Length: 271
Length: 364
Picture 1 (cartoon, chains in turn red, purple):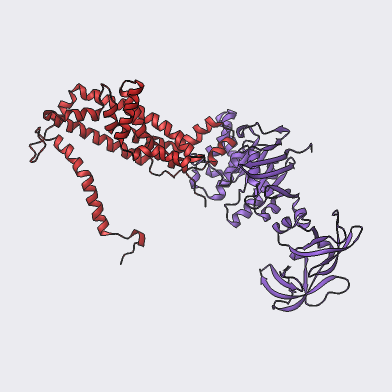
Picture 2 (cartoon, rainbow over the protein chains, first blue to last red):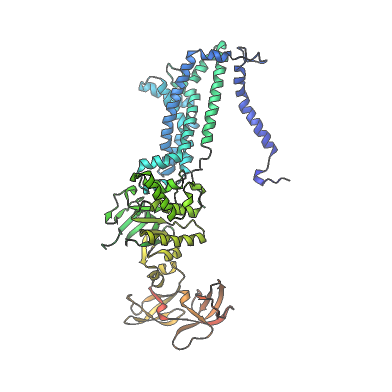
């Protein structure tokens, strides 16, 4: 009946499932931008009318911009540091066979599965015991723990996808380790580096729990938003702000995935 | 040896408890095409990687052009390597791949381009400079790997099974080109292969390796005609083996009672065989002559039964059973116009040989 091969045969139930899946996942998110243009402070149907005033109001509020800048500061630092560590860790995991390698990888990936509240509380206890005051630095430290697994998971396929003989060839052709890194290794993993930077920035930017436990007097954007939820008159502006954040997150994640779309393209196939 | 260009002296290599190289000493002359031949896991690639500097000997020393190499990192060694899968940089085009090693020489751009053009001409790919690595066939990649190494004028070129990934036809063509290239550039080649035919075709000398040791180091003819052990004899080409016992020694002439062949005469050469020694008599399939009738006069011969034959076009293979032998003896004969008319199986035939074609090996 169908000319498609067995494995590519179209499946109607699967298509329906996929559509429902996407609706359930993303429609609630769409309500946020929808109500951010609504001319009412109450989030309810029917819609009252189109307005941009919540956006206009947003631009006049200084705390929002402070919170945004805090989040950007933390996000940028965390993404750079965790990508840097991620590069070293991924290289070690991909290239060297050392005792305890398996458990170590599992250990690094742990923050993906352990509830963040546990990490948050643990870090908070540790930091207060050490007498370190809470600040954006401590938030960054918490985010680093959250971001490392993302960074490594993004970079690992890049290292595994390229033949170690390329680095040997570079050494053989007269380049030392540093130049080999610059001329061979870095270009080969570059898409992974960009993807890791974007992904970890997004993760840090959106992160709430760690920030909640570890922040001092300067709130990050998610904390600020959460704080504003208590005031109904502030809520539409929060929706407007959230719309921006959603749009920016989507763009960053998609660019990251697109750049890293073929993690194994760097590997030459051997015929 | 003082005139050796590469001198590998008593080198051992351990990976953990596993001994990959066991006390290997090899001297390679300047401009020589030298092959390391052996099945996989015999240590040939490890030895090559030690020459390149990717591995260091656990003990022993390697000298290249009189200089001890153990403290010299790969990027300072006067050797370049052609990798098994060529290791062409996929993010660079052909020109940049070939020019990769020139950065340190700080040449003016024009001079560099000129050198790359020369190389592209040498490898017969002048139009391919702007191609990406993934747009190239295996043979083209192999040539680029060669050019990338040769442009640096290394003292030694190391080749790690460079023809292994190519199909048969291309491989034979590349063998020819490689040999010509080596004569043109006059660089010492150290070539690793598991393909005995390839090694015989290309090399000036070959070291046959097994279990991290050099079994025999000789010219292709030497290895084929005068193998020093059963392992070498069976690794290179096909060989028939007969158990035997020395019955008489007279100078270098000896008489042997060989299983299946009966009493035979041979020359022991340098070997110290004594009466009563158990030895092995070996003969190549093409050194045996197959006839329907007993050959005339004093020719050494034995009667057997033709079990089956295989027609291979240019030649035919026959398998002959001899009394007292479990394994049939292989005979290879060229198919000429007056081809031997013994194609039918299971009929009596005669095998004959000349005494000098027998190889006498110590029993193992």
